[in-house]
Image (cartoon, rainbow, N blue to C red):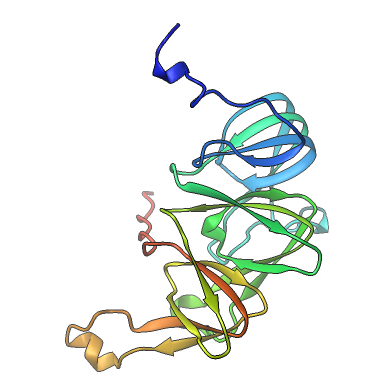
Length: 225
C-alpha cells in the first residue's frame, strides 16, 4: 500500500518511555504502565492490555466525578499498553507540573493527566454567583497534564503593575498564585442599548501567566429528550 497517508508524517512513532507525549499536535499518546486518567470519550485508539473504568463521584474516596462545575466525567486507564486521546481535533499541549507548582485550569480544556497529580475543584475567587459561579480545577503534585485548546493559545504574563482582563468564556487556565476577581467593563444599560456584550471579565493580578484561547466558548446545544 502506497500514498501520502502512509508516510512517516502520519505513522505513529515507537514509544520511547512510559507516560504522555504529543503525537501530532491534535492527539496525545500515553504509554501506560500502571494507571492514568482521562476525560470520558477522549480515547480514540489503544493497544496492549488496558482496562478502562468510568469514575463516579467519590469512588474510593479518591476521585471526584468532575474536574469542573460543568461535570466533566473522568475515566481511569490501567494496565500496560498505549492509548491515544483527542477531542474534536483541538490542539494538544502538555503542562509539566513540578512539586510546589499549582495550575488552575478550566475543565473543558482537560484531556488527560498522570495519576500522580492531585486536583481539587474550586470556585474561582471573586466570581461570586455570576453565571452560576466559575468552577475550575487546581492541579498540584508532580506529573504531566494534557490540555486541549481550540486554536493556538495565548500565554500572557501577569504582573502586579499590569493586571490582565480575560473573557470568562476564553480563559484556559492560569498559575494558581494569581488573584482573581470579576471586572465590569460597562454598565448594564450600555449592554441593553446594544453594547459590545463584553460586560464582565476575569481580572488576574499578581505574578504569573494566564492562558487564553483565541475564541469564546461555543454555546452547548440543548440535549434532546
